[in-house]
Figure 1 (tube, rainbow, N blue to C red):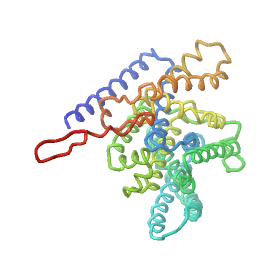
Figure 2 (cartoon, rainbow, N blue to C red):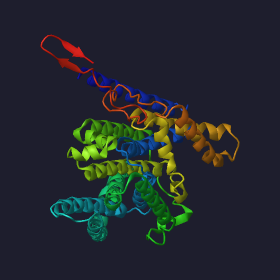
Figure 3 (cartoon, rainbow, N blue to C red):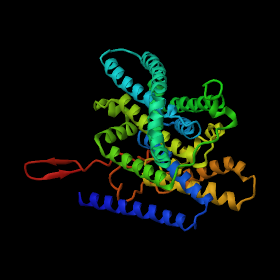
Figure 4 (tube, helix red, strand yellow):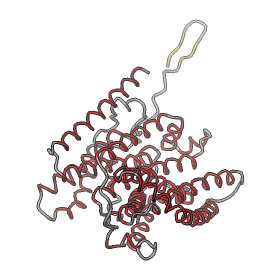
Length: 427
């Protein structure tokens, strides 16, 4: 118990020091805008990758859909803040709020009702949830329009910066919840698939989301998103405080989840799904829970990313870019929280920072050659990742490492002892 308390104290002090050092460097203008952007992108990628590590590294689900939920969170929050700053309307925030809340309540109520019905297949459940969600989104639009004027007047009465920060914070949370709810609906029919088929299905989701974003101004009815031309006019309000705060929260949530009985069940599914089921663990529930929490992290990270550069383009969320968090997780180490965070900042500083400055123009196209080579070298030389199973004191000895299947998992049996009346005969 004392070790856990000491580790928590060291972690808190270290987090405060890191935040203070970066903040001082910014205030003294030692860090220019380029490196400030790179650091914030590194923190955002750490949040996305922590969600994927939870899904893949700790629960064993090979997913390529993390980038889709990242895009959903980015565009949802960007549209709401755009309407507030450019159109001076709280309609986007209100519709997003009511849609998320009503859909969440419906998911809980329908889930309780469905649990009492035996034999209902996943596709039937998905259709039921989908119909309820579509109806409630329509209700959310009506409620948002009805309350738009009064809520806008209330927020406008506050200082401009205060109202903007309130809207931004609410949008970050709602973007994460929206991504979580979409992942729940998508996961109902898909999580029953095997690992490889699940990966293909999530890759398909990423492609679908990208195509929808390309046509968001026509198909989805959001002209301000401008489809394939890219969305502009997004307020640049993602500060170092916001990204660092949500990164620390993601680490703490991940750590506490894995320490709980839910976390042990999640890891048991990764280790041996059949044995976990034999012990009475609800495999479908824990797969869904992990997928939803990981997608929530992606949605939050997307909301933070959207307000860094003030510009979003669908090509940022294509299926090739969806491999970035997977590469980070593999480099850092599957099942390693410390490795994931370290690899995220290394990815941002090296590939997005130093190489862009030091190497000649046009090198960006070579990254798709460099990535596979680095992955191949990593798998050959250090298959457990850069940090392997290492964790900082705050996380050390609390999370069982990813089992190496090449090692002999069963210890040799002890010598057989046969007791007799006069002596023990050992063989």
